[in-house]
Image 1 (cartoon, rainbow, N blue to C red):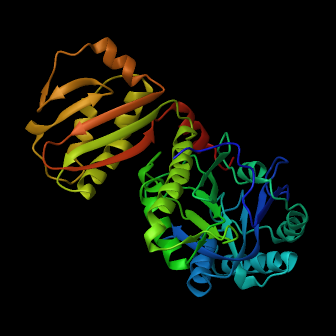
Image 2: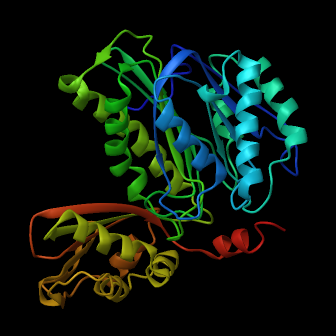
Length: 394
């Protein structure tokens, strides 16, 4: 499925991003996505027990109104997490202000927030900002929208595809506090497909499983993770059970592009690392081992230093809580095999270090146990990551 940068709009939607004064420095910080008519909608959210107010609000709205969503409001700088009942009231109020500005009802609006935890939304700035965003709506504002939702990101994430008469376009943000199920990330995806809420939810869960739930930067899971998908239906291309697979394939391509973009842009990252665990007894086993390797500080710092210290990979695999026989393990960096059935090979150390120092590194750990595989996308851990997160609020 080919991702294209030439798609600038999706039939049935308008978008804007304005400077509402939420950031310390002037830049767009409030993004609004509006559908011309009610959409079917689906969402996938963080599994963190500490859920931000917008997550709780959106879960409530989608349960009650999955076929009548008109808009998504996204603010940067303030997460509206750990803000109690006032935070929930503020989430509802921003939805109500948005509804008033676009001629809808509050029940038709979803909200997302990203930024610092424990701070209330600056409501004196949100109300005029929403009014300004509503006036600035246009069909081709997606690049600005992708920039408006950034926090520590250094570049916008946007992906789109056209297939079988429909268009799918998504934006995302995320660079740290990133772990599967999901990560410190927000993503809003829209399509002009005509699809029921039930099928849309099934498609989104599958696409997220193969994309956003395969990335990790630091193993920490956010309070605000949200992926929302809205379908306007204006293409008149009806997605049914028998045509769901092509739709999922296209949606997965968009999600995967966005997910990989997050890892490429991870805080302080200098390497993009693809970790395959193969020949496992089950996909869950492969996932747990791959993720444990991917979040290991010792593994990540070795790659930062361009050091092919593969013993750290074995160490991390062994503490994942999944039983295996070390005598069956085989390991590759790219096409270079380092270990065969538990024994180190006489490989070229210079070549191995060069592979470990590559901008994109592929690691394959074969367990020799079964037929299940899993891939996780991660990055190295640099001095810059510590600098960014050591001074996140200061």
